[in-house]
Figure (cartoon, rainbow, N blue to C red):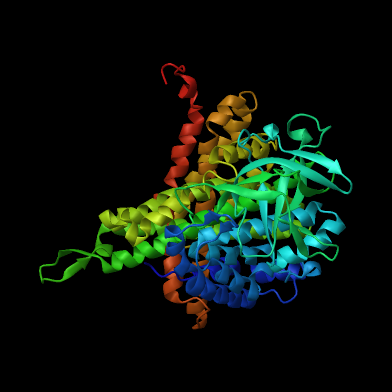
Length: 596
């Protein structure tokens, strides 16, 4: 099995040159936050990822979570690994200091979360859901609920879950039927939820479920949904777990991948009703849950990067070691020397770098929004479906390339390549499918916004092009015309959508996934070009002053090389998707049901 190594240098480069972490910390008076601190954090997180979590990944795939008479038993080694994660303070990294957290910015948490998901995505899903529960309680929980639950969730002593989906209500949350009946100062929750990630386990002393349910007098549809805290163990007056609540896992799904992550069917109220506590106001649960869902959507997008990076590292090592063919002098030829293998590796590497740049820049915008930047709020909302949709779709391609590079050995489970491909397959589905993200992007985030957020983004791409055009660097001169043409195509699409999309929403929906993918490739190309520009500037500075920055010349040249490849290989996809959009896909409904 391959060894996972944290991509520390590229992470720090993005935090330094694109996010401008030191500048962000100074702007918002984030004391003690610096690039130097980030370097230490990523390095230390990399040790836990490499030494503890990554070795459990293949074992968890073979020996997944199981349901016993005592509830769900997690995969072997996971409880000890989780305790190390908690003991080293990683759960508290971005939590507010008033609830026991370290108060570090979201962008640093994102950089670290990439490592957990690369090392062991099934494991990392557990703290990921806890972080989302924390966000929801901070934003909407009463002071009493915050006092009783946030300290333990942020410390990692307890974990959290998100309970939305029901057997008859998948993505259609208007059909949620779970009931909540008032009883004194709490509610009795009755109903069933499915596909609940880490809905049960024995790694912590309590699990805090956030559950969507309806009050008896609630209006129909999404306007009648409320959100409740339902703990696995009811708390005593002093806040400690006591008796088992009427909430239990009744079955586990047998899945294509992420076998070590228990996906539970949860039953609430089989024996009288589970005790739950209302979060915020009645009938506003869906709005509250979107706080958690939007956090989860960016996190799932990050998983697309993480699993692709893990697959890339495995493919690279295999390509170096595997020999096929012989030279005239009798020396074996490593397959990494063959052009098509090199093409696939470059597709994987440049794709990962583009996704890393986008995920960290999007995470930094969340920090800016938290500090009152209204423009950043608009950008976060625009970025979220792109991060979730494009990055997870690209991960399907990149993890598949890992199998292709392995050849027949990639199709054999023992090499581990298939696991990354299987694990990645869920990413385009959970927390809102690609189609749902695309409808959100074209509808709420573009047409309803009259393309304001899109226009601002395109203007930023144009500003970067102005810088690129002034450069005499040969690599940048290769990138500039390709990015220019991509920007022109995207601008044409924007104008076409504003002209055609408002009057024909079905047409807009038909081209929405192409629009999302086009924007993903454009954002990736823009940030890769910006990375190449900064790398070239650093090299020029080093040569002029006869000194070295923290980045080696080899690394800086590599950044320009992957950006050049991205411009040649991925930016043409902007044109492909744009041309599809501009066709209106009028043939989508050209066949009737019988013809289909």
